[in-house]
Amino acid sequence: MLSSVLLTALLACDKAAMEAADTAAADTTAADTAPLDSGGDTRADTDTGAATDTGTSTDTGTSTDTSTDTDTDTGTTDTEPPDYSVDACDEAWLSERGAVSFEAADGTWTDYSADFSAGTVETPIRFNLSAPGTLHLCEGEWFVGLELEADALVVGHGAPEAVLLSGAAQQTPIRLRIDDLSATLQNLTLIDGAGETSVSLFEETSTAVVGGGLFCDGVSTLTLLGVTVRQSSAGVGGGGYIGSGCALEAWSTDFVDNEARNTSGGGLFLDYASASLYFVQMLGGSSGYNGAAFTSYYSDVLIEDALFEDNSAGRDAGAIYLIAGSLEMSRSQLRGNSAPYSSPALLLSSAEAALTDVTISGNDGGDGGGINHRGGTLHLTGVTLEQNRTGDHGGGLSASGGSIVASGLIIRNNQASYGGGIYLSNDVDATLDGLSLVNNRASGDGGGIYMHQQTLSLEGVVFQGNEAADNGGGVHIQQSALETSGCSFTSNTATNGGAVYANLSEGYLSSNDTFEDNTATNRGAALFARAQSDSALSSCAMTGGYAGRSGGGIYLSERSSAEVTDCLLSDNTPDDVFVGDVSQSYTWDTTASFSCDSDGCE
Image (cartoon, rainbow, N blue to C red; front, side):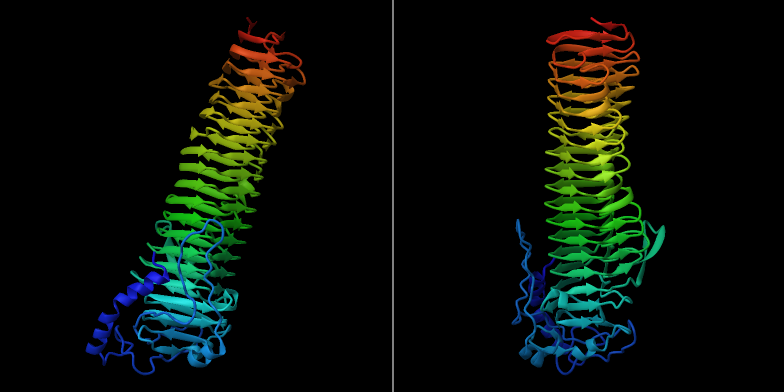
């Protein structure tokens, strides 16, 4: 997408052609066609009726360098966001150019202060910017909706919170509805916008009024530099609607307290579009249904160095809802968001997503406290999911179908009913090597992981300090198959199966794992296997386990079996193995190889 610097360069390349065309068409009026005659007063009459079109007749010259600093270099930084501030208008500026002025390439300036001042909070006006150039706004609250019909830079002079384009809760402050345009907004605030454009959504299955703060529909580019969009609302896309191929690029931009009243996209709604968001904050957004910060529908999204905080959805996806399309997110945070049904933070539905160095924390609500993954592909690198809470499944991560590849994933201090850290079902293709699960809690089963109808292989995973009120402090295997290698289970706690609980398991295979200081208040500190669940453990260490009744190491019942090869069993209380079918207790207190079934151990 084009920054304003690129826009200026592009327009400058066309200057000679425009000037030649001006000579050939000197008699063409502003209302006819571009290019326009630069001579004389080019202002159009302005009707002050509410939300009335007041198309301008500005010179078609290009935007030129001004005395103010409007540098729009969008180079990334690792720590501080780019600064797009512009000095306030001084007395000389106001005297010479006015509080609202348009700058043409040939140096011609047009004062639109009177036109913009005609808009009031009771009757805001619509102003058509129909020729390329730069519109300068000095500090003030302008009750004007800009209709962008040409390549343009709209720049605020002064503190961005003091340069306000207000929709007066009646109209959208910025609309771009033409293909092949490039527009840039810099250093200003869009406030009190109200959606006024109706579009068809979701493959034309519904219609909604969209785009409270800004609206871009068509194959054009819209760039936001140091912009704030706040306190705007619409049925869909309270802060903004980006659709039909529009490409949004935002730097150092905030979406604050925007609302999607009916359904989706409190801050933004993307509809077959694209967005690149750098150093963006989405704060306090709300939606009647889902995607309180933003919803992306069959769109491609790139996010770097962003914050999504305190957003709240009426049903699903307290922060971000991605339906198909793609998401690449890095160095960002999602925290303190809420949604009662599914994923208070991030909901992915049949999408392709890659998160790098992202922290998702302190979110509260429905299924998947940190991430809810429903099909598609998910890559997690250096991601931390912590202190998220749900009354359903997966305090940190809930996944059903699709694939997940994780590296350096940390899941800690999360809470859920099932799967305090992770809930996996419907055969997710998951690669979670090097995963760290620490101090997660389930009020039901599976403090670290709950598996249902799932096949999973884990290598080098840390299970530490996880707790289940019922079964499986480290992991609960329900009608699933699990293989662990080089994993450590330390200080995990449950009623049964302090480290591992297997029920109707299709098999548990363990090699080179350590089970240390795990606790079962009832049975099976390291492993509890029931209902014909078969296990095989080799080269393991099972030490310091404590069970309140039996099976300080392993507890087997209901025709389950265990094949143990070269495993150290030591200091387990009250015994190393207990076979419930025959009520037989065994203690080796050494490295041993043995097999157990419903008839006992040998």
